Image 1: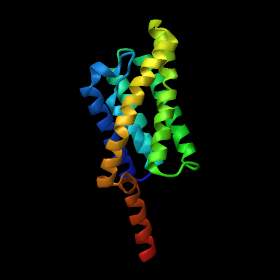
Image 2: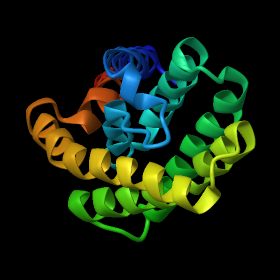
Image 3: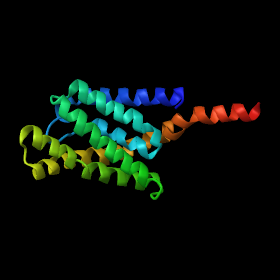
Length: 175
């Protein structure tokens, strides 16, 4: 992994943490209205964003979660599972909007992991908690998709990570 990829993923993690901090009162309830989850859509632009997203989730749960141990296992685990499912599916799903729709469905569905966590930790009813956490995730991911798409039009997430690789290849070829 090159320096630019590491730096960009560090920025993604920092943004995830900053947005999570701002919405902290709403991010750790049984609704899980964590706006920073919209950064999960970065994965559809380039799979190398997995590092920054997972690091952001890990550090957010480490510093802000009222149930750190549970969230470090279940919260980070849910993110990794959903991100890997989306990465695997990108071979078969073409187009950014289709990938974002699939990513939204995957993240919404896998909130059963968080519902299980909340059931273990607080005895909350599993199905109701799955419904409420999934609803919060669905709203954030649906609202976040056009935002991430618009930002991509301006920034081009794929080139943000891939530029240094193509520059290095160009230098080797031109020498």
